Length: 333
Image 1: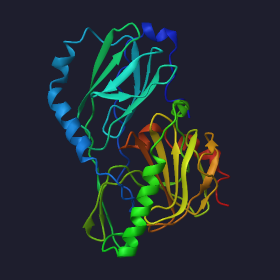
Image 2: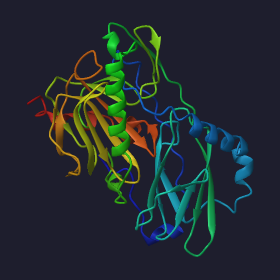
Image 3: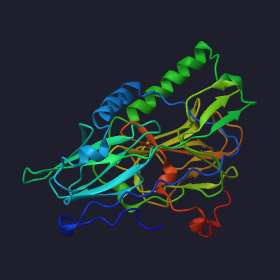
C-alpha cells in the first residue's frame, strides 16, 4: 500500500491546499454480521457540530471572506462523512477544527475526522508561528448507509440484560474508558494503513443495524469474514492500550493507539498475542480471528476512532485485491 500522504517539509510553504478527493462509495450491501455497542452516543458533540454547521451554511460564500486558498497547510484524505483527513503545516503551528484544538506533532503533521452523521461543513483554522492565520471551509460529502437486519442472535447479547450482565457491561466500559484516557504524540498513522486481514467484507461502517427485530446503533466499523485462527496484523504501528479476552459484547478485544487520538479496535478475537503498553509495527501479528462476544460466525470487526468519533476504516485503505496475493500464508494457526 502506498503511504496515505507524502508529508511535506519546508516546501509546504509554496504549495496550495490539496484538492478535495471524491468520497469513496460503500461496497455493495454486505451479508449480515454483528456489531459492537459503543459507550457514548455523542449527542452533545453532534449538537455542537450542528450549530457550527449552521454558522457555516453557505460554504462557498463564506470562503470568499478568507484571503485566498490556504498556502501554508495541506490536506489529503476522504472529504466525506466517516472520512479522515491527514494534514501537514509548518512546525510550531496550531490547528483547530470547529473551534476545538487538534494535536500537531513536532513535524507539523495532524489529522482530523468526521463521523457518520457529521455536519456537511466544517472550519479548519491554522495559526502559523508568525501569528498569521489561515482558514479553510471544508465541504463534507453526504453518504447513504444501508440497513442490515440480523436475526437468530443470542438474545442475552441484544437486550433484556440481567443485573449480573449489566455489571459485566459496566466493568467492560470502565476498562475501555481508562484505556482511552491517553494517546501518543508520535504520528504512527503517517505511514498509512493496510488491511489487518483479507476476506469477504460482511459488514460496512455506518449501516443501520436491526438485531432480532430491535433497532440498534449504526455499525461502528468494518467486518471481514475469515476462518477462526486467521492471523490479524496491525494495520499501522501503534501502542497497545487494552488487550482483554473476555469482553461481554466484543469478546477478545485489542485497542491500538496510532497517535493523536486515532485508535483501532479489533473485536471477536480467538487469540491475543499482545499486551498493554507493547509497541507493535505495521504488519505485526497481534492475534487471531475468532467468534467471541456477540457474533454469528468468525470474523474480524475493525473499528477506527478519532478523538471519540467513529470513522470509516475502509476509507483509509487501498482495494483489498492489491494485497490479498501477499497474504496467501495467513490461512490460520
